[in-house]
Image (tube, rainbow, N blue to C red; front, side):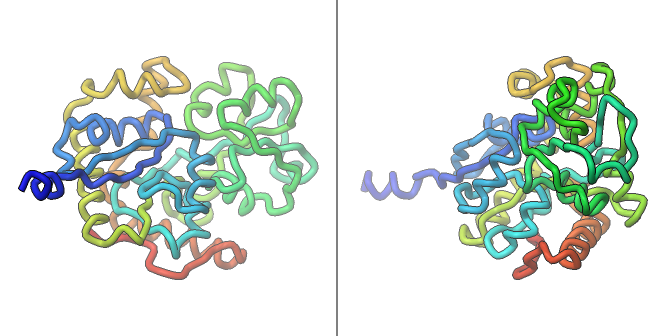
Length: 287
């Protein structure tokens, strides 16, 4: 009888990957630190740079993971996008920065540092400057210094770097989010939370609900997870962390809604035209 009871109460273990950036730790704090009822799940976390998470997705290592939409383009058959947890928005796109003023026309002749080949940032660079091929991958937090040290001419920056580059004397050449919004009229889809299709629809439904509850808890209790968020942040100044959260966590994070879904569909359509999207399978999970 005791063994049967243990089997009935055994936790449902889910591997969960997300980045150390404040928007992700804000979203997942209540979930992973059990500030909400996780309903029998046990989440084993893997916290790493988004490009590392992107690479792991190609071998379907994690059950649930933050991924760039640039990666999901190639993995629709294996993963499905949750309705909650995404990073979409206006005026929040990747920035091209440099020590010298350049135009977009100059880019094909310049050395460009990118935060990962599979990132949405690199996908947008391909849309904006398809002839730019002299690229070097590096950790997003190392790109500003690489530009300052003249190891590259231009940096494509994401995350907290957009709040610090000007203080270091670097100049903004272009906002690829503005480029996207100007050409499509939609918010820019940067990253989302994806679940392996193989874990089953009912579990997917429950996980989506928990992530939404985790975000709602964070909004209702803004100080509860602050130490957790700050512990993982690359830039630890309170104002930078708050700006980061305010920029990347919004109504689209709670639920994509019609506009969010339309934005992602447009991204996929453009990628399909360029021959880089795998559109086998539904894009979204309907809760």
